[in-house]
Image (cartoon, rainbow, N blue to C red):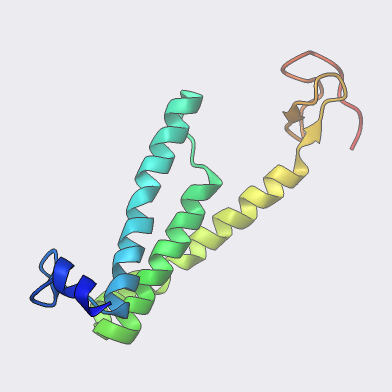
Length: 132
């Protein structure tokens, strides 16, 4: 494996970065957190309206968790730690709200569409929805 290191990073660095496990955790956090942008953009384009998919909140949670771990255990920088210390609260809350909303949907007997809990008729086929 040493030959691979010498081939990719003869000076002990790759892309000008000295790599070790905590650097990988930090970079993984950056990749996860940054990928939220593309997930949200794709969902919005697909639905032709502003949409924040569940994957956005999972990527937010994972990315900020990795960055918090990197800040706590490697950098030990109070500014960096505080920046990610409480971000998990709205991410988890949004995941809970999304889960509850999805669970509350009612399925239309006519076409199988998931309808909002307050709907009286299916927006797709017009069938009257039964009581929940």
